[in-house]
Amino acid sequence: MLQVIFFIKLLLVHYATQSQRGIEANCNDDVTLKCPHNDIDSMDFLSVIWYKVKDKQKFGLLRKRKGEQVQAKGTAKLGEKYSLLLFGVTVKDSGTYDCTVMANIGYENLYSEVNLTVHECVTKTVVTPVTTVLNINQSTEPCPVQVQDLPLMWTIIGFVAVGLLKIVLSLISIWVNKLFFIFTHR
Image 1 (cartoon, rainbow, N blue to C red):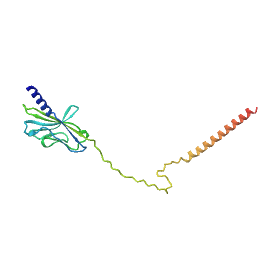
Image 2: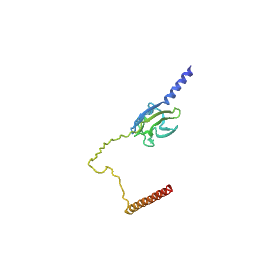
Image 3: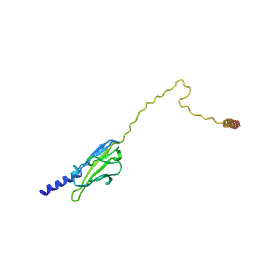
Image 4: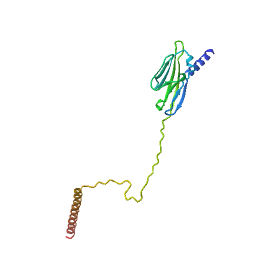
């Protein structure tokens, strides 16, 4: 019986240290992700590290060792009570963040995850009214078609070609009629 109680307590401790919370934010918001471990300053620890978890790999964002300055990568900053401050978040910032408290020898490390969901960036569209005025008395179309004149030489050649074609077709039809008349009156 004592072993069962110990096992349940062990599971509860494990669950509490592996807790996962979710935070939702809008695009371009400043977000604070709180490290859920209570009163970290009173603990005997080496450092607090924030990671971004992607494809089951951890990428370090910042680290604060007890008594030292913060070492950070990118735009992440350390806030009150070792919270992670992210400025102007976008959809790319969505994901899982891990707060790890590295304990001194003889103590247990603490891990907790926080899920951040950033909603799509929506840009406001400005509607500009457009008024179209048509002049009814106007003799040309609102969008006239650009017509290009052919050179005079090409125009003359075209008319001559059409005229010659008419003459040739007339001669052929006269010849066909003459042949038809000859074969039918024999």
